Length: 336
Ligand SMILES: [Zn+2]
Image (cartoon, rainbow, N blue to C red):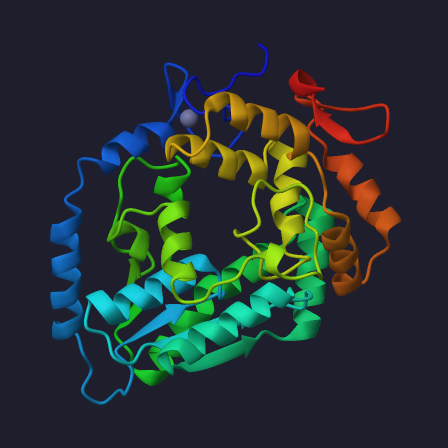
């Protein structure tokens, strides 16, 4: 059977792990329609009440927010303070060993200063980062498996340590990207009396909304700085905080035939920003591109050569859907 794509948004079907499609329409598109049935205002009122009722009188912070400094972090913090009566959230940022972008540094700084908040910058053990990231890169081509676990775990550990009852995460990835048909409010790992809430299950998540909220607080994009002319991307405002981190996203292209350009461009179709044809053209033009600066930064951070990087990519390339073009780049067979 050839390569199939979603009838509505153009996303490649059948390769994303745990994903489903119905009659040629991806679950992310079906979930877009389900969003219209969710009573968002009721969820928002419920959250204000929930935060109020769950306050720990012994803690100076009402909740923990895991932040990258990106547009979603800005939107969440802004709404918690301006719409839900939160006065003092504790922001927890998990650093990796990659090089932060100038935009990422400026945006995190701006977020903290806008509302005069406490920020805990959590740097995870650097040698463990190198060891674990190399291992999951060479063995599974899932380089940031360990880092992603830390990004989930550290805000929860901080909440436990300080007796803070609620932790906020951003979007509900299973729902937004089509692995689940239900928009759960609580993360399944909620335990020890601490509740982990997906903010994207309280306010309908969209790129345009997050960007508008963030820009109203002074959020800046990659184009506002000169340090990184990013390639292999559909925009200049998502996942802009760290350079080497992009490799985690790009390796999905090698394994599954899609990466960030597909995710973002098809999401833009669902949000009415792109036509399906525009998304398909963008995917064809740039989803396969590995940003050279991201690659260099990734290799530096985990202490490998670019040759070792390339050899590992070739070993894991999904040849059912990919082939090399005349310049030696892995491309989707149907888009070459
Ligand atoms: Zn779709």
